[in-house]
Length: 212
Image (cartoon, rainbow, N blue to C red; front, side, top):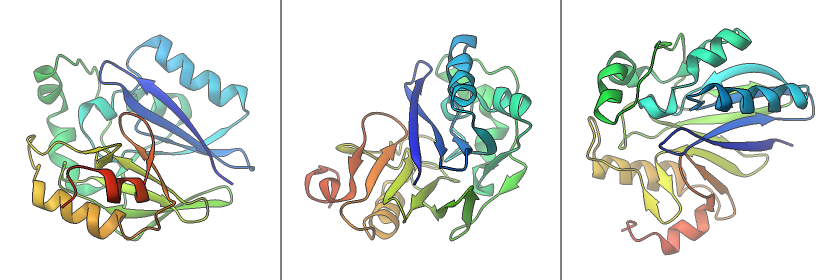
């Protein structure tokens, strides 16, 4: 069984995740830690629970979701993993960040890439990769079928959806991603979004005001 630990990091309140199971292996998703105190919170949890980080995954490469990539890579000897279509965002992270008042010292470009349908494994657990553009090219969601949850990045939120007014954003594409890649999951699947509280597939199907 996967344990989902959520940290809320940086001025954009990014949900950063450590997922681990009974083996002690863990993966780190969207480390947004932007200060030494946030870095310590992440590392203290990993050390305190005797975890072994085996992968760093980015659901997408908007700068607020990658602020801790360099720290995680250096400390745990990991390489960022994501989708190749997010190239624009890691190449322009300095400029993109400056627009929102975010400073990022060093960009760690992804070295490992995943595609639709790939499985990310750690310990006894696995997550299915679903490609979900619309908020940003290169966006992926990670689905645990065994534990019935999805790490949704900035695709779907509690009562809302990802914004589509940033580069490569497209409302129709986002809606197709939600309907074809997320709403095909059973209603009881928990949704852990990139910002804000968790929700469920069933709740968003009937209550989300953006759903057509």
